[in-house]
Image (cartoon, rainbow, N blue to C red):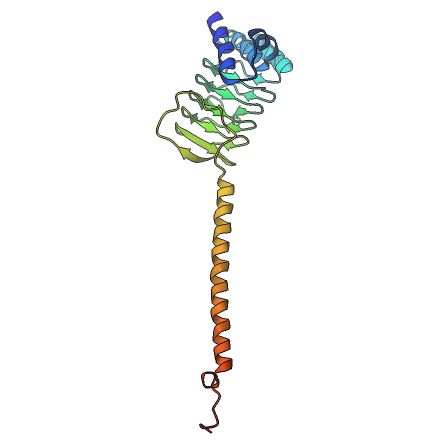
Length: 236
């Protein structure tokens, strides 16, 4: 248990440059508090208790703004940055070295029994406000952009953005260290708009060239009567 606590503190120093001291982490980081509460509640939950672990999770929610169901399985090195509004469902499984930002939801999509929440792999970063909904697997070394809604499986070593979530980057080389730059993700909507603007400029250029040729043709007809069907004096 003390080894887990030590690891939970260590990952905060690794991923949050604002962390200055161990005492600051212990007393001022709600993500750290929520993980501690959850480990206690989960131990009680797997020992067939129901009410007490739920009460602990509700107390944790009240104190931290983070709701983690006691049944969720969480690996080593989970870091919840800021954390307000984070929701983790009952059958969620989270791997090692995962980073969640504020407002993330790992939820279900219906009232079915059994496994109904996502399984998150190792070294995954999920941006602020993202929603991962359903019983599917998110692979290792995945980045999910802020505000994205993911509702289908995600392969490893990919980047997902948008609503619904779309894979915009797939790298075959595994990421050894967590890449926390979730603000520098490709924007497929912006890229599409750029393509449309380039197409419009091309069509305008073609249209202007055709209009120029048409104007020259009119000038030639006006200056040369024979070419516009008007007979000269000799012809008459």
